[in-house]
Image (cartoon, rainbow, N blue to C red):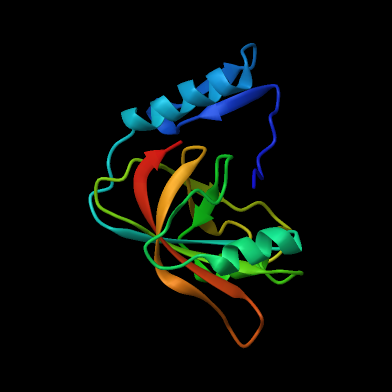
Length: 168
C-alpha cells in the first residue's frame, strides 16, 4: 500500500544530510538511491516507540492487515512512511472507515530520518508553535509482527511491529 506521491523533487534526509534531488531517473532507481542514503544517517542510540494511524483503506487491505500473525515479516507500505512519537497525534488519522493504528518499536541501531516540525497556526488538532516529532523510514521497510492484531472497543485495528532496519 503506497501512500506516497512522487513530486518534481524528493527531499532526502534532514539537517546536514538534507538534499533536494530532482526526479530525472526511473523511479525504481531513484528509490534505490534514496534508500541507500538512510545508511548514512546516524543510528538510534536507544530503542524508540513510534505510531502511525491510517484510515479509509480498502476492505481487502484491512483484511490483509487483520490476518497478520506474530512472527511474520511484512512490508506494510511500499512508499516512504511517516510516523510520530505521539499516540494522540497518530489517533487523529485513524478515525475513518477501516482505521488502523500501527504501534512500532525501532531498536537501538535503526537508521531512520528523524524530523521535528513546529506547527503553523490553524493546524487541526495542534496548538500553534507545538513541536511535532516524526520519523521517515525507507520505502519498503521490513517489520516483524510482534503480537497478533487486535480490534479495540472503538473498532480500531492495532498492529504491533518491530522495525528490522532492512528494506525491499
